Length: 122
Image (tube, rainbow, N blue to C red; front, side, top):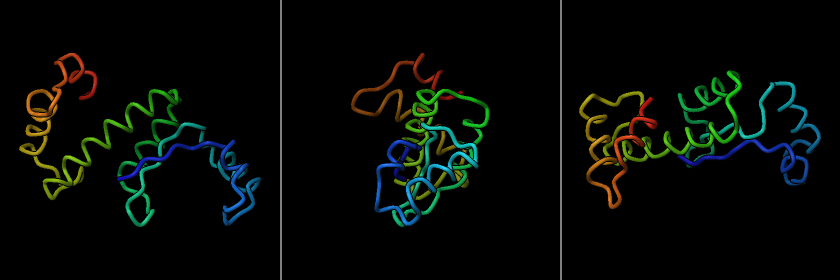
Protein backbone atom coordinates (compact mmCIF):
# COMPACT_ATOMS: atom_id res chain seq x y z
CA UNK A 1 0.00 0.00 0.00
CA UNK A 2 1.40 3.37 -1.02
CA UNK A 3 0.32 6.57 0.68
CA UNK A 4 -0.32 9.90 -0.97
CA UNK A 5 -1.74 13.10 0.48
CA UNK A 6 -4.10 15.57 -1.18
CA UNK A 7 -2.32 18.78 -2.16
CA UNK A 8 -4.24 21.34 -4.24
CA UNK A 9 -1.11 23.38 -4.88
CA UNK A 10 0.59 20.36 -6.43
CA UNK A 11 -2.53 19.56 -8.47
CA UNK A 12 -2.46 23.08 -9.93
CA UNK A 13 1.23 22.74 -10.88
CA UNK A 14 1.06 19.32 -12.55
CA UNK A 15 0.47 19.63 -16.31
CA UNK A 16 0.58 15.83 -16.74
CA UNK A 17 -2.82 15.37 -15.09
CA UNK A 18 -5.45 13.97 -17.47
CA UNK A 19 -7.77 16.81 -16.53
CA UNK A 20 -6.60 20.40 -16.43
CA UNK A 21 -4.94 21.32 -13.15
CA UNK A 22 -7.74 23.78 -12.42
CA UNK A 23 -10.28 21.02 -12.94
CA UNK A 24 -8.42 18.68 -10.57
CA UNK A 25 -8.39 21.31 -7.82
CA UNK A 26 -12.04 22.14 -8.50
CA UNK A 27 -12.93 18.46 -8.24
CA UNK A 28 -11.23 18.27 -4.84
CA UNK A 29 -13.16 21.38 -3.79
CA UNK A 30 -16.51 20.07 -5.03
CA UNK A 31 -16.02 16.79 -3.16
CA UNK A 32 -14.97 18.65 -0.01
CA UNK A 33 -11.65 16.84 0.25
CA UNK A 34 -9.22 18.94 2.28
CA UNK A 35 -5.49 19.16 1.73
CA UNK A 36 -3.62 16.56 3.74
CA UNK A 37 -6.25 13.84 3.31
CA UNK A 38 -4.43 10.51 2.89
CA UNK A 39 -5.07 8.36 -0.17
CA UNK A 40 -4.01 4.70 -0.09
CA UNK A 41 -3.27 3.09 -3.46
CA UNK A 42 -2.18 -0.41 -4.42
CA UNK A 43 0.57 -1.23 -6.92
CA UNK A 44 -1.88 -0.73 -9.81
CA UNK A 45 -2.77 2.73 -8.42
CA UNK A 46 -6.24 1.61 -7.31
CA UNK A 47 -7.77 2.82 -4.03
CA UNK A 48 -7.24 0.44 -1.11
CA UNK A 49 -10.40 -0.14 0.88
CA UNK A 50 -11.40 0.21 3.62
CA UNK A 51 -8.49 2.58 4.19
CA UNK A 52 -9.54 5.24 1.66
CA UNK A 53 -13.06 5.38 3.07
CA UNK A 54 -11.71 5.62 6.61
CA UNK A 55 -9.32 8.41 5.64
CA UNK A 56 -12.24 10.25 4.02
CA UNK A 57 -14.21 9.86 7.26
CA UNK A 58 -11.32 11.36 9.21
CA UNK A 59 -11.29 14.33 6.82
CA UNK A 60 -15.07 14.71 7.07
CA UNK A 61 -14.75 14.76 10.86
CA UNK A 62 -12.38 17.70 10.53
CA UNK A 63 -9.21 15.95 11.71
CA UNK A 64 -6.10 18.05 11.21
CA UNK A 65 -3.77 17.09 8.36
CA UNK A 66 -0.93 16.09 10.70
CA UNK A 67 -3.33 13.84 12.65
CA UNK A 68 -4.50 12.18 9.43
CA UNK A 69 -0.88 11.72 8.33
CA UNK A 70 -0.05 10.01 11.63
CA UNK A 71 -3.07 7.70 11.30
CA UNK A 72 -2.17 6.94 7.69
CA UNK A 73 1.34 5.80 8.61
CA UNK A 74 -0.05 3.65 11.44
CA UNK A 75 -2.49 2.07 8.96
CA UNK A 76 0.31 1.53 6.45
CA UNK A 77 2.47 -0.27 9.02
CA UNK A 78 -0.44 -2.53 9.97
CA UNK A 79 -1.29 -3.21 6.32
CA UNK A 80 2.34 -4.10 5.53
CA UNK A 81 2.55 -6.42 8.53
CA UNK A 82 -0.68 -8.17 7.55
CA UNK A 83 0.41 -8.47 3.91
CA UNK A 84 3.57 -10.24 5.05
CA UNK A 85 1.28 -12.74 6.79
CA UNK A 86 -0.88 -13.18 3.67
CA UNK A 87 -3.74 -11.20 5.16
CA UNK A 88 -5.27 -7.73 5.11
CA UNK A 89 -7.25 -5.56 7.48
CA UNK A 90 -10.59 -6.99 6.32
CA UNK A 91 -9.62 -10.63 6.91
CA UNK A 92 -7.27 -10.17 9.87
CA UNK A 93 -7.82 -12.50 12.80
CA UNK A 94 -7.33 -11.86 16.49
CA UNK A 95 -4.10 -13.85 16.24
CA UNK A 96 -2.86 -11.47 13.51
CA UNK A 97 -3.59 -8.45 15.70
CA UNK A 98 -1.93 -9.95 18.76
CA UNK A 99 1.14 -10.76 16.66
CA UNK A 100 1.15 -7.19 15.35
CA UNK A 101 1.11 -5.79 18.88
CA UNK A 102 4.00 -8.06 19.88
CA UNK A 103 5.87 -7.11 16.73
CA UNK A 104 5.53 -3.39 17.51
CA UNK A 105 6.19 -3.61 21.25
CA UNK A 106 8.72 -6.47 21.49
CA UNK A 107 10.10 -7.95 18.27
CA UNK A 108 10.93 -5.10 15.90
CA UNK A 109 14.46 -3.69 15.90
CA UNK A 110 13.39 -0.70 17.98
CA UNK A 111 10.23 -1.65 19.89
CA UNK A 112 7.83 1.11 20.82
CA UNK A 113 6.90 1.77 24.44
CA UNK A 114 3.46 0.95 25.81
CA UNK A 115 2.34 4.60 25.81
CA UNK A 116 3.06 4.82 22.09
CA UNK A 117 1.19 1.57 21.50
CA UNK A 118 -1.77 2.94 23.47
CA UNK A 119 -1.91 5.99 21.16
CA UNK A 120 -1.54 3.88 18.02
CA UNK A 121 -4.14 1.30 18.98
CA UNK A 122 -7.06 3.63 19.59
